[in-house]
Image (cartoon, rainbow, N blue to C red; front, side):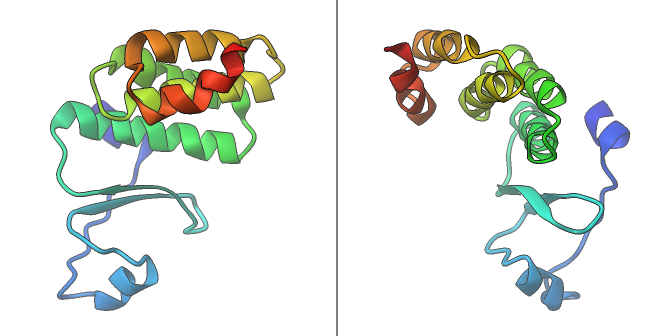
Length: 138
């Protein structure tokens, strides 16, 4: 998986061997994957097993969240857009579409929210993310 080797430093921790780490991050279930920055601050969490496409989409969603929290809105929008467009069937896709629109808005494109609401309604009309964006349609 190229996204793992390109963007992450994987670390495997076993709950029975290092329970303090599980306590520190309040991991409730295995597997739990955390996307942390260089300071050990959590930016995204994936709990439980996922099929490959969903897992990759979640990792990319986490990268987008990290960029967004660092106020790198253009990078965040691009990362979210990859999930939204290239992993459209993944569970993370509606959330990524939502945050792509928010990132574009925060980056200065104030027209992006209405289009984001339209896309979410069209592609993921039953999702919570489409409902959250519905206010932007008016």
